[in-house]
Image 1 (cartoon, rainbow, N blue to C red):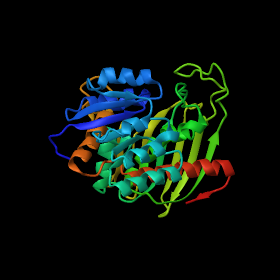
Image 2: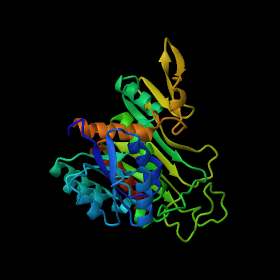
Image 3: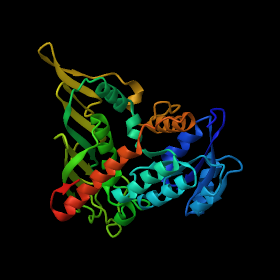
Image 4: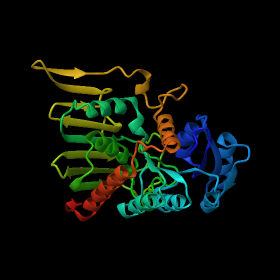
Length: 362
């Protein structure tokens, strides 16, 4: 599209992730207008319009009404996970470029429909893995591209919360979300890990999911007590993934786990030449001149995910800017749908393995 034109964006789903990430980031971009808001709760759409929309922005509860507006260029799908696939497919078919919030879909079959629709329509599709845009992630990725690590053959994808169960919306509802912490935050850690390895060919996986703490009450949750009757998703999940070339990944995820050192959306990689982790800031380790070394690059304030400022180093702002630039300049977005599809396939494999008690082969 013409770089002098404003990119007209419609928002489907005006809940927490819309207000916490997408809307502030899009609103800060000078070449973007947010012109339509859709939510099943009309008051949420109206509130979002009042804060972020153009004066003549439309509000609706039926997403198909928003898609019928031919002047909209881009749609952000920010609904519960179960709705990601069919809304994204409809939006692509309506001629819109789509940013869909993570995870891509509740299973690989639904994710494949999204990829097929993007190819069929020629429209761009990306998934909201903003942790790639953190300064530590970008630095580590550049080292991987430079060949610093050599062949990465072992990695850890870590998304461990001690007691941070999201007790609002439909997060606890396994049916609506497709799962719990594995599909919610484990997906970020796995995406980061595969991206660093540049390896999207899984061979098999073994998984375990646990429902050990989700029926507890008065359990020290940082957001207050959850309702055990509503909490149908797992409280923790773990996976071992072996890739076609033999590379192996350990995936750890939890919303509630008796673990004293929580960490979220982190990756550790071990290669033939060097390794890196995000345990204490970003650390790169290796051997130089016959001696072990650990390098800790100074990433400044950018090492903090979210901080007070103009948003320049905020990963959500970086994600939005990169995505809109890809639309305007007809370039590839940072997160390719095929990469997100592989993440979904692996998560699905871990859940299936946990259910059957057997190895899941891709």
